[in-house]
Length: 575
Image (cartoon, rainbow, N blue to C red; front, side, top):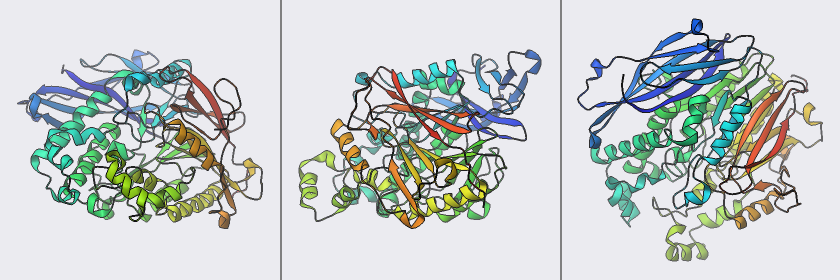
C-alpha cells in the first residue's frame, strides 16, 4: 500500500474494566507533493491465539506529517488503537497493517495474571565510545529477546535515555552556535527557521534509524513499550542549567523540539491532536491514553508533565513520574504534578499490593556532595586550572564543568534534597493509607545496584510500610564508568546517612555483588560497573515482587549473571 519508513512500534496503555488498551504506530513514506487529504488510512488487523474468527480491524489515525525537504520525502505517522478483552488464559495477539507490514505478535496476560516485564535505561552510546568494542547496541537486547522467547514479557519499560540526541550539536545549522567561544554571545543567537528545520531533521532521522534497526527494534515490535524520558532524550542536562541558558533561544528550541519528538515517537502522542494542553485549567483534558496523568505546565518548554500510572495486573501498578518537563536547578517536579499523581494513586482499587515508581535518576545513590561543591565553586583553583587546560572538562553550552549537570540531576543534590525528603515522607503516608508496598526502579548512572529504605526500629521488612526497594538498572547499551570511578562510588556507598532520621527511616546500599562473576569475593559489592537490564515478575506464592538484575559478564558478549532482589508483600496494618 505505502512504503514503510518505520515500524511497527507497540505502546501499552493500561487495563480498565477487563479491557486491555494499547497502540501500534507506523511511519510511511510518500512523495513530497502527496496531499494529506488524498491519503487513505490503513487498517491494522489483529487476532487472538491465531483464531481468524476473533480478528478485529483498527483504522489508523493520521497523527503527524513530517516533510524531509532535503530528500524530497513526506513521512506520515499512523496510530492504531488496540483493545483486547482479557480472558481466563493469556493470549498471543497476532497483528499486521494491511499491505504494509509483515505479521508480528505480542502477549496479553490473563485476567488474574500479573505482568512480567523488562526494565531498562540508557539505550544508546555517548559520543566518543568505540561501539565495536562493546558489540554495538544489540548484545543485551538479544538477551531480552531470548528471555521473552523463554517466558514472554508483557511490557518493556524504558526508564529514560531511550535515545541519545546529544550529537544534534554537530548539525551544519548549529555550527556557528556550537563553535562560538563567547558563550554569552551564543546564548543570544536567534532560533531561525533554518536552525529549527535542521533540529527537526536531525530528530526525525535519528529516531527513525535508532527505533527502526537492530534487536531493539525487534523487541519493541513484540513487547509493548511504556517509556519515560530523561535528559538525553532531549539533550544532555536539559533542565539542570541556569535560567539564562535554559531560556536562550537555540538551547531552549532544542529542548522544545526534543520533547515534541519524544512524545511522538515514544508516547505516540501529539498534544494538539490529542487535546492535551499546557494550560493549568485544561491539564486534565480527555485524551485517548487512559494511563496519562497530565500535570502542571513545563518549566522551559510549552508542554505539561506527562506522567503515567498503569495497570500491571490485579496486584501490581506502575507510576512513571515525568521528572524532566518541570525540572529546574532547584526543583524536579512542581506541587501540581505531585498532587495529581498522589490523587491518582489514592484512587487505585483495593487489592493492589505493589506500586513500582519509575524515576529517571535514582532516589538513593552514593552521595557526591563534596565533589558537587568543589565543581560549582568559582574560587576553586583546581577547577580554574582544569577549565583552562582541559577543554573537555567543561561543556560547550555555558562553560560549566561537564560533570556538574549530572550531579545536579541527582535527588541528593543540594538543590533537590528537601524535595526528595518530602517525596519519601509522602510515599510513607500513601503506603500505609493504601496498604501497598512501594518500590522504585531507576537508571541514568550507567551502573547497577540496589538501595533500601527501612524503619530504623528494625521492623520485619514485610511489616514495615517504610521498607522500599530502589533498583538501579543502567545501562542496557551505554558503557559503564571507568573502574576507578566504580571503586570510588563503592567506597562512598559504605557511608551511612542521617537525613531521614526525623522520619525514623534509614537508607543504605544493598551489598548485592559480594562475589564477582567468577564467584570470588570482591570489595566493590554495592555498585556494578557493567551493562545490565532488569527482569521483574510477581511471585504468586509469596506475593513478593521479584526483580532480577541481569548483568553483562564480559564486555560486548551479552552473556549475563543474575542478581535477585525481592520486595516483600505489604503485611502491615492499613491506617
